[in-house]
Image (cartoon, rainbow, N blue to C red; front, side, top):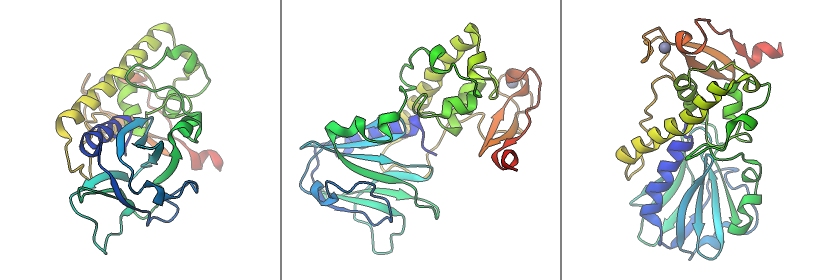
Length: 281
Ligand SMILES: [Zn+2]
């Protein structure tokens, strides 16, 4: 489930590995993986990689000559570098970029769903390109003042995951951030008092900082299929809270499963299910 820290780490590792290399070939075997028409993907051939960076949960591979690949890994994608081209039985690659060193950069996706995508766009038009055009400010390294940003009658769990509000946080890291900030996932953004806002303002960058540092120390090439996510709350329901030792609980919210500590976050209250399917009935 790549979110800001995972995508940031991927961008750093790849930037160090492929910047300066020339593209020897470009193939897009994934159905619907390429979401742009002009310029054609073949126009990458012969271009050098200028660098790899991140915006929100997107990867951007910039090429000399003014082109950029905008990539969204969605929930099950990886951008990985291999020493050799993929064989004929490769079923996971959505895009393959051959490099002049003989190595191959692959956008791979696990599971049956094909959701990861790529757009090839002029660098100058990148910020006008959807979904970057409507992306909120970066959650890391320093989010802007949150008071105005979160001043909405929506639950924090939904607000913080909304990429239009703040970019980079998803279903895993939101649980860690809310637990560290000692805030209920159902608390409405508009109801946060000054102290609560201050805690969130501090914990968003600290939590993500910790994660980026973690990957910096453990991640190297080849980027593994499964990233070792250092989560202590998300998917840890049933285990003791690392702060107070109460049992961590989980609750269904829309399409998500939230983990939280009733003692640290909800004044002992157990949250009720707010499943989308239940609301639609
Ligand atoms: Zn606790």
